[in-house]
Length: 233
Ligand code: IPE
Ligand code: IPE
Ligand code: MG
Image 1 (cartoon, protein in one colour):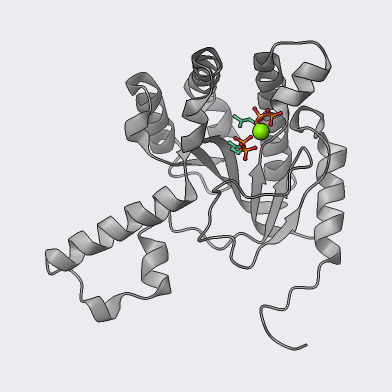
Image 2 (image 1 turned 90 degrees about the horizontal axis):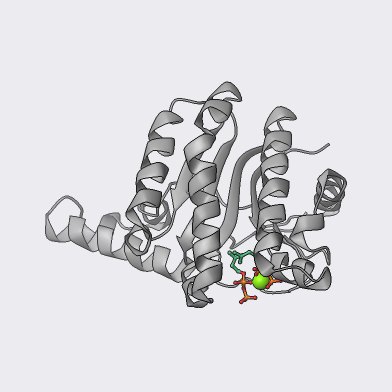
């Protein structure tokens, strides 16, 4: 299978998956998290991807019912608190992107610890976009840069696209392939800077049904794409 340097996934359809089964939306999130964990291990073991960015909770998602937000936060907390040993064995490195100031302190502590404990791993980089907004990331990078200019650490003339990327939450390569499950054809504020030349793929499958066969289909789809980057071949 063709390798993808930076794969993005907008995890979507958990709620509708549950609703169609007559279940509470939270059960969709529970199943979705299990599927996501399998995908991470698979992509790492098969060395199919170098960077994997996962949109799991947007800044806008805080406006959902409190019960659902709480369920998701507990799910993340349990995940991040228990996965360190496995990710270290598997050589997986974890990043988080997003506004930590909106999150509960116990979750932030678990995130900081997991990033710290996996920082020397050299396999797949998993970038969890949590409490994340693409515009917020651009605004936050702008503030960082302006501060450096004010403190005379940087000249205005030094600001270019490369420097801007270096001031985002993490200095990641551009996204090559972006998958959004559940049939929605939109970006919903995901990695606006990094998707400028990404290939998009919108399978109808709800995320809890997005199994490894679906992942393989996505890679087959990517292999068919003709990426020109504005040039003529
Ligand atoms: C994605 O599934 C998970 C999160 C956004 C946290 P949704 O919860 O958006 O599921 P639908 O879109 O309502 O089906
Ligand atoms: C986008 O999904 C956010 C995440 C996947 C975390 P939503 O389900 O919240 O997006 P909209 O509301 O359908 O655009
Ligand atoms: Mg949704």
